[in-house]
Length: 369
Ligand SMILES: Cc1ncc(C[n+]2csc(CCOP(=O)(O)OP(=O)(O)O)c2C)c(N)n1
Ligand SMILES: [Mg+2]
Image (cartoon, rainbow, N blue to C red):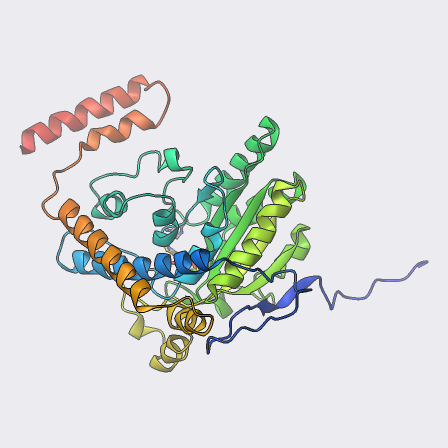
């Protein structure tokens, strides 16, 4: 047969070495001004990122405590993942939409969503309604991967309206094994949707390790097949996550389409408060990642550049204490929400079927009272 069979694809246009600006020991890894991810962050931005990470971790502890005390139905800790979600969300504009999975406490806080609002969702007394739309944040997505499609739809809407906002979808490594995520990525690439896919690869989808989820060399490599840039980033390096996501957001805003970012990090806690990770992962593995803790690393870096101080630590500690108290006060003994509210937000105009179901629920609850 005429022509030649093309060679199998052996090298692909994906940045395989994770982008890193600060090494695990806190020393900067980039000094070249030619580095596209190099940023000259002002000291107040550096301090703000630190504050956001520490407050996220402290609140996370309070959420877990409240669950253990029977005040929350469930909780999914983000301990260990603070750098990824703070870096990714801190570089966005307040008018850029975020589509979270369920572990993005830090991203919520950066948008001004209160700990009490987040706690209400995990208490199970409020269904999440329409999410935090006044803050351009979509509902927490427990059905894995579905919100990737919503993010692309929102990005395409912005594109058609001529707005210059971008959307950011937070997906887990496990979510990228779902059909919905593939459809979202493909659709976004075809229509050049201004959407950034930020995949938090925390190595596990409940008890399934990444190695059992895909045969590809990495999640970012898949970008080649979708037809979009792919980049791996050290997810425990807040500055690298900020720089990589802001590049992707800029490209999306300028009409360059979507980017698939894979942030390498680790879920330090259990999948949720209902999980026992000692049944499927080794203490050694956990210890190895504990040594790469994103907050310890960043504090060492801030000390070396003269931004960290006792005063900063005190200020951060005081804010954590205040927010923890606010959360506890709002959650402990909180009134039940009206569960029939869930019928009000399904459609713009409630259907006769839903009216009947709402009345049935009201009648049943009246009997319980
Ligand atoms: C469609 C769907 N399938 C299965 C589940 C059960 N489930 C809940 S969390 C989860 C793992 C998700 O892993 P990943 O996307 O890596 O996020 P992580 O929990 O690690 O942050 C699964 C399978 C679900 N919620 N929705
Ligand atoms: Mg995961």
